[in-house]
Image (cartoon, rainbow, N blue to C red):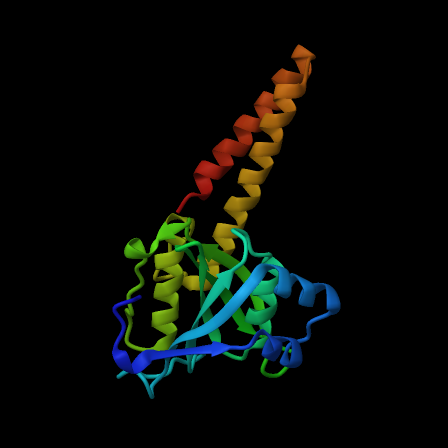
Length: 218
């Protein structure tokens, strides 16, 4: 699938019941698992044992899980629950009808729950064909490899400034997303508004939001 060293290939199927048993899954989420997910394969394991690479300050192992779907859409809650509970950094390879998406999150160690993670923001690709599926291992340690994965998957969603770092880049990405949502809502309101004076006022606000977005662009 990826041009990774053979030593990193794990390729083992994980029964869905393992997730029910070991993750904090309520009945509603369990039903979502059953309805949406066909199978989960632990595809690759990236660690000092499988790669000629050092651990990072924060990351000692990266897992790539291939999630086969029964339908084209997977609930965000399912991915986030797996991501939060498994004590490693994960790249999700979402598979439906021979089309793929890559998902990856910015995550930090939970301050109050040992071995658990706080999942902040997801970056993902569009649906792509397998022959166009690409991910490269780049970096001198696993921190850098994971950061590179986020940038490769996020593409124009995130740009990391070397001086400010990944965390700040994620914060800026979230700020831009909020502005884009505000702009979209304002455009819808303007389209529905019939009073000219109110339209003029809203157009002024819309221009300010767009100017702010342009200023936020990295």
